[in-house]
Image (cartoon, rainbow, N blue to C red; front, side, top):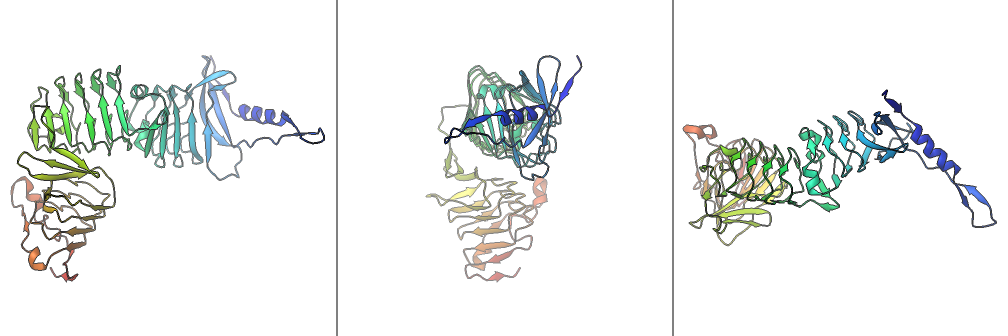
Length: 455
């Protein structure tokens, strides 16, 4: 059947209905005509020939209006359901700041909202089944996505790629009105589809029911605040890049797990593993998704008390011999002040690797040692405070910290020279050369008497 394109009829009908509305005045029995509502935008539709309409575009009704608008997509048009937002429907539209998508919409097309740089809020009904490739590409202003369905329904949406999921760009995610801080994948869900929660900044903890079998590609990739993950018996496979970048510190691998795809845990800082599976894990290896790349302890007894603890957003690991390590932080801040603890601690290897959000860091008096590559590629780090009690700095601790210009030290120049700065001379770490010393790139050292030390 030939497709029919309808553009402005809806807006015309809306205005006509408003003009015909009459209300009674309170005095003298007179009546007056209501002012017609302002029609700010005009949606365009296309009939699919099978009893439903798709939204194909939007226009301003008043070109002189330069402000941004909220678009509320109706669930029906001319008595028939609106079931889709077509490919490219809102592509590069700059005047839409919020969109409300009804439950009737099942398909959001390829590039549907690509380049909507003013889009800050998005409401999605529970009927969506597929989001096309790059549906929300470059929606960098998104602050909040609100989904009016369940966790199980969200897990079942097909996202064609990571840019088809608005969470890739949004700061906050709400499911059925509640902020998604803790996600519990419920009974009945056996698969979390690829890209389901990719880039979701809200999630801090995650758990699964025993019905889970597969976690798809990049399902939780880029969830930069996800530090607590509890897998369940029944899980068989973890997909490619499934948890890339999630700051997980301790994990239990269930006995049913048979495969972990490459990069599944790339960028995570898993220091403690309870391995109940048949997978053969060795600390430091990048196989099996890199789950053991940073492992300090790999155990098979899941009843053993965990050495990992969180304190004010900082993660510590206490090994069997009592050594305390600061393994990282789940908070994102330009200025970081490390905590004072009862026992001294070491900053673990690669603890702040690739943290390009940190501009200044203050090491507390409890810090005695900086691990290898601890601040690797902290490309915006410009200033660091170093305590008198620090004794050692590992190879490559400040490698590629090219903006580091100021080192404030709580001791004298003589005290500074007693610190052991590990120098890499051969082997795999040779690239680190003298970069255990924060002064290697020309930074100035300011001692407790506030004098700049000549290099």
